[in-house]
Length: 334
Picture (spheres, one colour):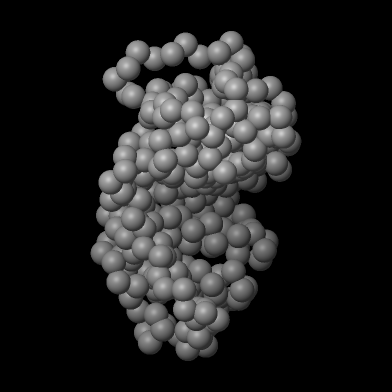
């Protein structure tokens, strides 16, 4: 593994604080960090977007360019399916629904009938488009402390109901002909987002509310990231909490799994809030990483963070599984 950054200092738990001041002159990044930044940037430029879900926008463009290559209506409809899927993965839910409608018209105009299994897949894709639209219009555009917490209630109930209503219609059609646990689960979630679970949904497909009860009451975990200055909109990733600048306060380092997702450092301000100091910490340009793992090396007392890429798709696309290597940032106070 190539190192991202390694602090050169003798280990000592009593070193003075070294706060990353955003107004101080930036220290030059070590050559090892620059090499890793170059390597990571090359991966995002050279990767096959068809193989990596985080490049759905590029994948949609590539599929669209292949439309003229279709030799018959069946091949053209298959490409349209792939196009709709890529649009959905890129967050373009409305366009994805339009692409599915266009596929339906193609099939009808050419007298083609999908297989029963394919009909179910088309309906499920359409339902997910509607659900994603509801999430974008509510959980993202009108985000609050209750958004996306299961079971959905209170502030998590959608104010814009078009997406969930559309999903319920399609999911009910799907369940009436080919019920699956996945479709039934999504139907329950859709009714939750409208505040109509459990009383107003079909009893036949209703998941008992007791299923969502915990064995032990650990209370509800509201989303307070926005209040703390930590509300980063990115892919799933990892987090490490440690006193990275040795000032006696626990800071945060956060990763995200998109190939262009910036590795971030948040300084603890000591008043319950955090300030992003990514560039001052010398991390700018270091991207990607589903997992962020903390450790202390046996040779030093410096806290080390290992940032690792997602395994499955990374290997398939030819991306180093653990391309982010190691990073020692500050003395550990353990």
